[in-house]
Length: 246
Image (tube, rainbow, N blue to C red; front, side, top):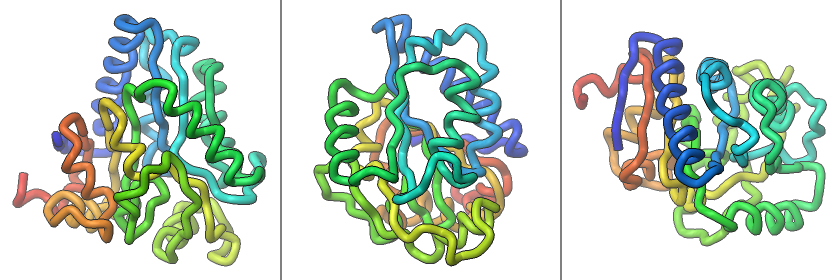
């Protein structure tokens, strides 16, 4: 695992996007296509903005999956991750091969279809964030490190739901869904490369626990320590509790 600390979230975004673009270009040059997983949430705003500006990427050769989506969430809702990805990535660069989790359909059918698609070939790079509670995708503590499934239905804990409220996606905690579809921890780890984009002071405690503590389902993103090709991009605020360890 590699840690990079930038002065601020904008420098972080540029550095992470440069590596992401390099990986995408390389995969396309070697195989003629690439498969990526994309995270959502407020922490990914600057990173995706920089990535969509990256030159010399043939986005028609990119196949995209994403990490999670709320159950019973229409794609018109401001908090919909399908809406987020269309507005911030898909429609901006013209990706045509997309696999979006439909939280309005029967979860078992969606899981079966998405599992079949993602297992057709390895994922070249997964872009992930880390939740304020240490979650990876929507795998809140205690995360299931052992499941062989690619996607599961998860129950969102209160800290996770409060984070979604705090980021401005909902008007009240009662509006935040309690269940979601999520890529599993094990499936995330199958990616050849993982780029974790984790800015802001509100993530400092989770970052400290995940990367200075033991690997535990109670700090789900700590499992990234086991992946040999993980690159974690922090800013000085999110890295505040790591400084003594760097």
